[in-house]
Image (tube, rainbow, N blue to C red; front, side, top):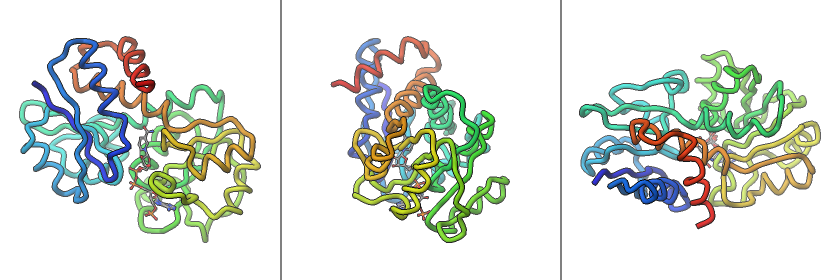
Length: 263
Ligand code: NDP
């Protein structure tokens, strides 16, 4: 039996096991996908091999650690410096990032957008900034602290802390912080968020499965919005395609994974 897992902290909220196990069941694949709570990201590689995994997903806060632990990184993950999907290939740990393309697929329903404000500067923010720029949507990054802005400055993204941010309007406001994931915090001071939402066409919270304080403010602003479910679905489809070596087409994977959201 092939074994897969998702590494993260927290990880108990993750829908990935349900999504991938639904595919394995539907297509009679001898495989199982579990959750692994991991607080020290530097142990990820050792645990991957100790559990004899065939592949894994990586979530908050270990995507940058996963990137550093790979034998080879492929595709857009090389530019992002963060990995959310790992596969074992001839004994080598290969890293990919499916969050980026998953997010772009989820954004399509909002129509044409010129610029975006990304709140947060972690692995997800890197993925979104890179793929938005590739898709001609200019991203600006806003984080509560300076520490993680180095990557964005080195790669010529406009990036600010709350203190240095020059307020202007953006087509889409995206929350990529973990504020609201397992607490009731807003990702920005309330007054700044209200100003930003009043000038925006739409908003996305990448957190899924709950109405976060950010999404509550978005609803008050009465603009089109979505949580992270569509992104979750699309990144999961792309990850499963990699796990199975392309055995099942993306179009066949989509309905099975989507159906798992209602289980
Ligand atoms: P990281 O740990 O890499 O980054 C977290 C970011 O959030 C940092 O910039 C951090 O700021 C900021 N942050 C954390 N808490 C707060 C707070 N209370 N107020 C303001 N900023 C805060 O996380 P990831 O990028 O890996 O993941 C972020 C979120 O995206 C998670 O909630 C994850 O579940 C979700 N996600 C959803 C996906 C989906 O498919 N829907 C896919 C990928 C991620 P600082 O630098 O100051 O510490």
